[in-house]
Figure (cartoon, rainbow, N blue to C red):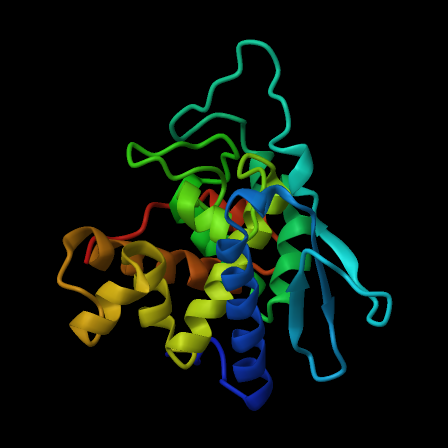
Length: 234
């Protein structure tokens, strides 16, 4: 059975992309002041706004309390490579996944498939390249996405979904291109005019689509979907 398009691009989606991009530009412009608290609110048209100087007119809400910095880790803590945590990790973050997927208008099964391939639901996963947490955010990317503590599961998942929403808008909801860009970067996908001829990226797209199908087939049993056989090679 053919997988339907993941996202249909609409005028509201285009507006949301503009708003999110503006938020990222704001953080970049803050420079050394980027540790200031960030506030957000969604207007009547569904446009998401960010600022570090909220007015009293709009209903601004605290989005990221940057001034506190990353949360302190327990003594002896260190990020480890993939694995660990037992099978309960596959359902531990269900509520966060549902909330982030709904907020950024992404299929919940799609978000789960990205987390599965990126970290196997290990919140302390650290790649050799320095990607961090459940959705394997690079430090620079996480900072642009207003992620203060990439090791915090909620911040990491919301940051990763924020990035997926931007990519989905950029590539008109094309599932393959959105997934490829999450792995290789949107620039590589644009230059290639499709999925880049990079073995890792091509394999990544196959794996994500495999797990996306499994999570769609088991919408009420994430544990069963998550513990299936490994994705086939391309």
